Image (cartoon, rainbow, N blue to C red):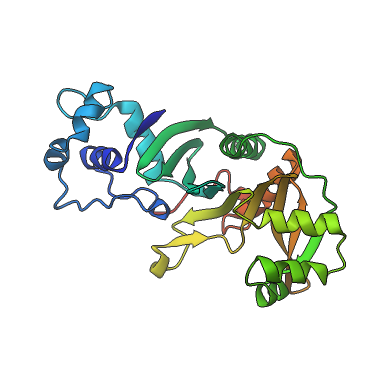
Length: 278
């Protein structure tokens, strides 16, 4: 694993000639004509990178780090996670889990700090699914599922009627849910008491020009670690309507929700092996 700063990652991009990495993470932009390798190596963080062996004496990046960056640059499929943890102030982390061919690499950003590391390789759907779920579990931690009877809510009605925690409680009370269901669902949506992981699937090269040809999944999966345990929220479409399913966050339920999410991309069931056309 490499731990550095936004500036450190910018230096590595400059010396490796990799212009763009994970725009969804809001990294420091690289301007190729201005941000040359020579200019980047004059940044103070370059000395820190050399001290830990990431840059050699001639300013070249470690080959392994270069490979990790190349996987992200050429990625075929990715999952993006927005993680928030209750506290004062709240702590936010953004993560991209990217696949190129059969290799997966993770890039995390928390404020000014970034972490870059390999997640492994997978050549079939089962192995790729297990790898992804393992990475999500590592990022979110392991905890017991909430003792919740699953709840189904119509998405349009939810969006029309809910604006804050008070309106959410009123809406849940109108849905003929028992008190435990109402309390658990309300906690799952409250970042002041629950750790939240919003997960979105991305397919570069398959979207519209206005999104830099990036296809972004039309739904998301939410993992919420409430005081009562883990909850999983998934969107499903049926009969021309969209519903949110709130269920106990068992490892199996979370895994299936993530796999259904990523299978909604244009690559479909071939998400684990699809190659981007450049």
